[in-house]
Length: 178
Image 1: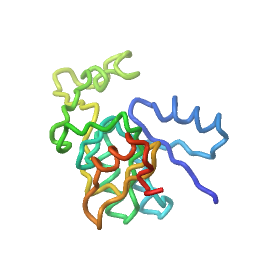
Image 2 (image 1 turned 45 degrees about the vertical axis):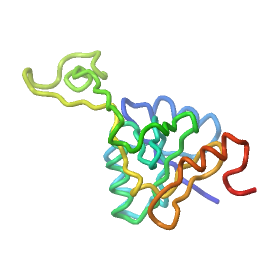
Image 3 (image 1 turned 120 degrees about the vertical axis):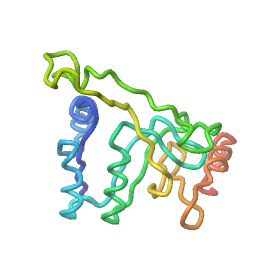
C-alpha cells in the first residue's frame, strides 16, 4: 500500500520534528506550507487526514495546534475522513466538551517579529495581535480517535462513547471486544 504523508505544523514543527521522525523511519513524506493542505484536498490528493491532540474531552471534542479545526472543516467539505491520534493520557473525562478547554495565547512577538519572535520586527507597530496556541475541533467533524489501545469509533453516526472506551482500556479489556 502506497501512502503519501503531507506535513504541516505550527512554528515549523512539521519540518523540524515530524519530518525528522518520518525520514528516520524511512516513511515517504512531503513537507508543505500550512495553507497548501486545502489545495491538495481539492485536487483529490488526500485520502485521509490524521492529526494529533493535546486534549480530548469526554464527548470527543479535541484541542490541538491552531489550524487543526480549519483542516477538519476542509476535510469535511471534501468528504475526506478526519482522524485524531492521541494517547489515552491526553483524554480528560472531567471535560464535558471542548468548550471547557482553556486556550493558551502565545506571545504577540511570534507574529510581530521574524524567526518566531526572535528576529526583527516585520509587522506594523501598533497592530493588534491574536495568537492562540490551540483550537478545538468538534467531535462531529472527527471520524475516529486513534489511541494506543485501539480506535474509538462513533456509536451509530453521531457520538463517541469515550468514557466506555477509556474504562475498558483501564481495565485491560480490549475496547474492540476481544
